[in-house]
Length: 317
Image 1 (cartoon, rainbow, N blue to C red):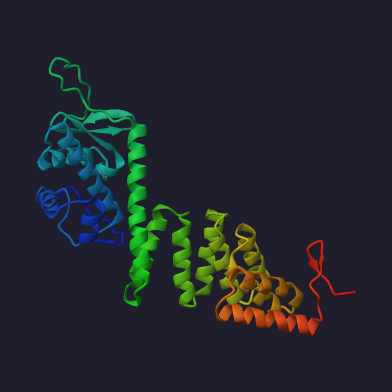
Image 2: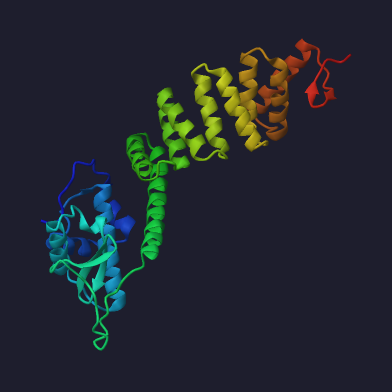
């Protein structure tokens, strides 16, 4: 058997794989019969990569009108495994050599069955070895990975909406972050799942990672402020809210929460500015009514007149 299953937790159902890679069941069955993949209903991230390579080989052969049989691929893969590669479809770059398969590995093109470097001097036969430039392969792989991560992210977002599938969303976000540790939207969404479960320490860690991954992402700082507020770390929460507002001055919810935090610290004059800003940005609804009430109470209790002196609120003289 060509493919040995590893100990990774499986992540993708058979239907997920068919949809992500745009495969049909007949092609999957063909690869299974040839021993290129194991018949299963669950696939690891590594196996997804193997299937993507097989799909690309098939597509390349169809475009060139030169069929490469599954049996031929299997023989080449097994020969490379015998030469010491654990997973040739991922550790080397597979390229077509006529109706057979060769591998680019450490800068050389290797004919697997002979273990010889592959050159083609038969110009008259016009069957030159097809060599893919490394930069083209890298760009193609980057684009494919980006599209697959985006598809996984959208599925995870949908799963969050149903309490019965939230855990599946967590697993998908973890898969995305394993491949792309600085994917800020996934860090934020996973952090929010932990936040809603009152797992505040985990949420804080994820939100902080999101702010480091994208320092211009206002939502990351807003969410970080929320979890710090829940953890009674008001000084740090205020700094986070201030950062969110500095990035997006019209961030109404950040003004509202910052006003609340200032009031809890007893800084009513500081809170006043943000209550008034919230009302200006979001003038209709129960939150706006609450903000107006708080602003009136502060003005009444502090006997303040709103007088601008270099941007500060001062008492009327």
